[in-house]
Amino acid sequence: KPVVAVVGRPNVGKSSLVNRIIGRREAVVEDVPGVTRDRVAYDATWRGREFTLVDTGGWETSASGLAAMVARQAEYAAQTADVILFVVDATVGITDADEAVTRVLRATRRPVVLAANKVDGALQDSDALELWNLGVGEPYPVSALHGRGSGDLLDAVLDALPEEAPPETLEEEGGPRRIALIGRPNVGKSSLLNRLAGEDRVVVDAVAGTTRDAVDELIELGGRTWKFIDTAGIRRRFRALQGADYYATMRTGTALERAEVAVVLLDVSEPLAEQDIRVIEQVVDSGRALVLAFNKWDLLDEDRRYYLEKEIDRQLGRVRWAPRVNISARTGRHVEKLVPAIETGLASWDTRIPTGRLNTWLKELVAATPPPVRGGKQPKILFATQADTRPPHFVLFTTGFLEDNYRRFIERRLREDFGFEGSPVKLSMRIRE
Ligand code: GDP
Image (cartoon, rainbow, N blue to C red):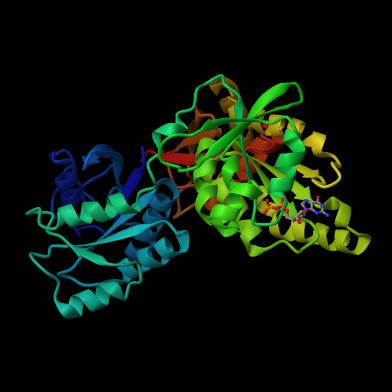
């Protein structure tokens, strides 16, 4: 279920708004800062769409001041939420703390919906201008107390939620594993697919429903059958009808949703492009396993090879964990190495670390390198659990916020000690005060 986090400084009416949305009166609401102690998660529904609403109201003002406190809250929310519902008090106007939150939210690139609370009716022009100037989009006037405007606000929240997985993503378990071949136009997807399929390929399911014209192909490789997702978008004969760019932009997302592993093709005869990086980012965000295939290796000379290494170091550091294969779709060079790389990625993707083992490991790690002190307090990590696989998702239960750097450190060590080659790893925190 997608997560919507409610963010804002104390007293803007977050809890009333939460109550209004969930239609119950569960959160403690009082006109005193810091009353709602805990960050609470609620199940909410709007127009039949279910989501989890997280009230981040529980941060006490610390010595570092209100602005720093709410900025931290926003940072936390951005970490864990799909959409952020940012609440300001329109009767007070924009404060320093609101601006601090805005800065954090803008940096996170998460969708933000701005609620201007305590407004009965429409916004005054001058207020509207000030709110628009925050730069997080349209302000929705609401009165949490009387319920006015909350319908429009929730519509905006729904619009910002990630697309609901279409029913076709519920692929059968135990069937062939699903590969998406992706990359910007002309990197060689079509050529590679032809090379892999050979002559006697079988065109299988024309997928009925939402993705028009999607065609998956079953291809036998390395002794097992694989399902290549939405090959209609890849093959030249289909592309003539649709335009190459159409696939690159529109279809990658839906192909990823249905796939388990993505093979991203890169063209070594040209410098890595912005679009290559975006495609890789898209895979990481989708949580799919990732293999990088450096294609057109037959065109590589020594000079270019030197620069390629540099580019990889500089631009692909974030996905150092992805297996790399250097291939030529044209000559067939090393194409057979794709399958073991894909299998490695999928195995990592499926991995589950038993809780006991995970916590023994974590205890040692934290004893050797404790989390940095934050706001005068030493956050403790109480325990960890692997909440999910595909991809592995770890949840740390802590007594305080762990800095980005420290979370990245944990992820790095997880990878060093447990592998996860070819799979993204998610790490989240549950903070218990
Ligand atoms: P797509 O848009 O990603 O499907 O790319 P295509 O498969 O259509 O390939 C684009 C161009 O690159 C075509 O002219 C191919 O012949 C060429 N090409 C693809 N793979 C290789 C390769 O490994 N080596 C060389 N030299 N050319 C390739």
